[in-house]
Image 1 (spheres, helix red, strand yellow):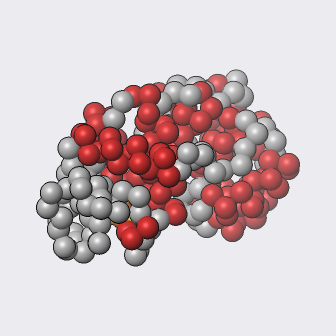
Image 2 (cartoon, rainbow, N blue to C red; image 1 turned 30 degrees about the vertical axis):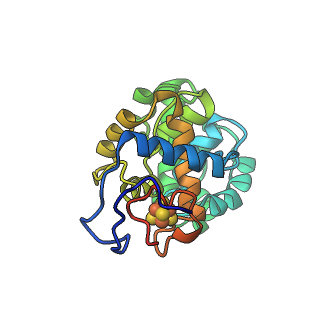
Length: 230
Ligand code: SF4
């Protein structure tokens, strides 16, 4: 792809610490448009049937892949289909079911405590506001924004590891703290696009802009990205 958008392209490696460069809002918008064209079907890759299942699946997805989570959740939700059931579940059994997702002790405790919070404070229904969601154990802004965006169509940024890495490489934000990155992304892009753009960046991070050895030659925004290696 021709390098038309950036007048001066750095020849440095794209992983040089402290050497990332911010781009203008115009370049950022062009990059996101091109990425959306590359991934028109980008969507949440976790399997779920309702808000409760998605919330638990997102908590389990920390430090592992959605594919791994999708392998354990059918069994988990068949055995404990509701917040009430999971709240009362034998913890050892929950641990055994989620073991393959890693950090299974903490994750099992978190999802059970989350289910208990839903039962005790929200009448068994998953809350639908960011403020309420983040009061639940194991639920931070990232998890809450996934749920709000996917289930309730409330636009928000999911600043996970992919969005953090790509925001820096693409020059959208040079911040390190996810809350600060979220604020910059909110300023940079229109509100109605936040959820779609989050998912699109996550897809690009999984399929092309890998943490190690990003595939810059086949990247659709290598003419716009200040971290491109080509
Ligand atoms: S893969 Fe694309 S977005 Fe990632 S560093 Fe390379 S050019 Fe930039």
